[in-house]
Image (cartoon, rainbow, N blue to C red; front, side):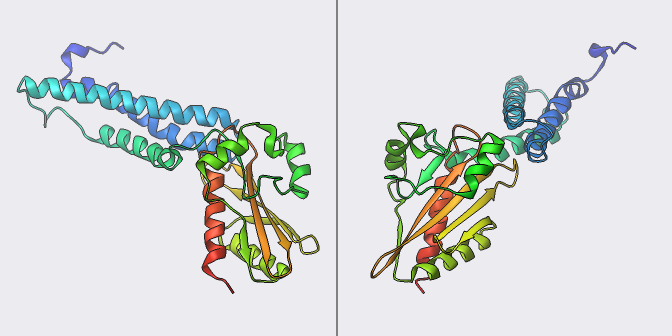
Amino acid sequence: MEINLMGLSFRNRRSLWVFPIASLAFILLFLGPLGTKFELFDYQLGLLMLAVAFVLSALMLIVELVILLKRFLAKESIKSSFDLHPIFLGLFVLLAIFSQLLPAVGAPAIHNISTNTTPAPGFDKARSLREILDSNPLEYRSNPKNAELQKQTYPELLPHVSHLRAEELVRKAERILSEMEIEVINLDLENLRIEAVATSFWFGFEDDVLVQVRDYDNASIAEIRSVSRVGLSDLGKNASRIRKILAKLDQDKT
């Protein structure tokens, strides 16, 4: 069956490409993250889908804007020619992706963050798990520029000093992690250590989190570390997580 495009109205001709593109971008916006989260495909494919959704929406909106301006300048009818639904879909896709990227503006391409970098506190249980999953290396200085980039970008991330006894500080940190819905996988009171896993909502990315408490005569100190299992850059997520944990530790000094 052949379609006579010239016999269609401008609005109907638009719908032959605008609706499919807007709909595809909208589907990819959800398919990429959720497909990755439920392990239907690799995270790299999921990120590619998100990038394609962004490009499709941006191109569609640019073309629509050009057409709109041309018809406006030609003093042609606009209200009867344009259906705003695909435009709203495209804007939704762009805003959804921008909302995820904006907090990451200026974040360096690192994924291994620690409040103590000399040396960074070491994981125990997470180490074997990451080896099984073939995750990013845990060594803090596997990237020679890691410490330098962290100090330049996140100079405020320092160990937390408390007047609480060491075991009390461990318990307090455990409570904070639970409140933040970070799953504790190893609570080691003997070694004053908590290991946990933080899982992102959309993609299901997993980051290993460590709270290592050290006992001193008149104080105890909590060192916090957060490391992504996959990816080169964490888009600032690990630093943001540590910052929130430190803020919660500072809120309640008891």
